[in-house]
Length: 219
Image: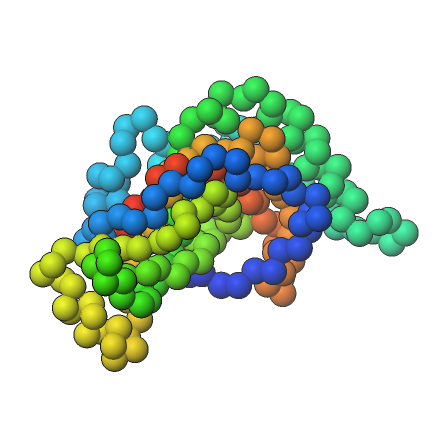
């Protein structure tokens, strides 16, 4: 996958004004662990769900939804201005502009990263710790934000693979997985624009997606 490896991004803008987002019952996060390959991930995604795995797919999707990327160089706070005011105005204007857009009702599929952790004997699977995949695009860094996550995230491998994974984890070897989420953009405040806190102050685009299905693929 052409996404960057996960790294911690502290993104505090608008945290105090974000709506309460998860109203629907969370989907099940207990699912079979698929074997890893790009074709496997593609095969999991039904035809009626739009795959947003590659930078080009994400850019095309944003162009249909948002028309054009923001001019990031004009959005930094200037002396005498309230911090984040320019970004606030941009986000509110774009929220209004995308109201009623058909893409708000289309299901999409995107990836996060996961690591297998403790073994769950009840489900014969592994609990999954997760983190975002950050994609560098011509629009900026894209970081999908899943909303309404399952109460439990457990990947269940085939029996033939179970003992091998248990051995790796007992030796403190890291077993990575892709987490494939399906869902729809939140109808209000679907996308938030801001700047990353990775030291470079790069433009960041954060789509908020109400999750309705979860899959795991061995990385």
